[in-house]
Length: 105
Image (cartoon, rainbow, N blue to C red; front, side, top):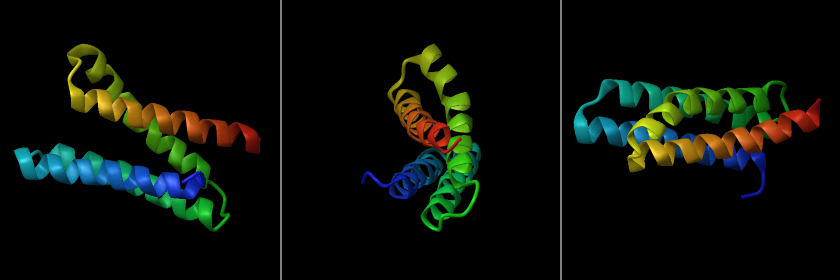
């Protein structure tokens, strides 16, 4: 799973799956909307990375920034497992795709 596109697809599954799970468990429409939107960004980024098209890394990095922007403040405030887990996913994406983006430039 060292390939960046595979990692982006895995993060897409995690975030979209988490949003769908949040909706099923609590009926939270924001959970499904945010999870599927961030998941779609990761999936599109992974697809573009795999096909060697421009802006794939940037899309995956954008998904990580959006996820971090919403989850890190909640994780700091609440210290609950779900925001902490989302923050860990975001930090991994920021590191992985940020490093890849810097190497391209």
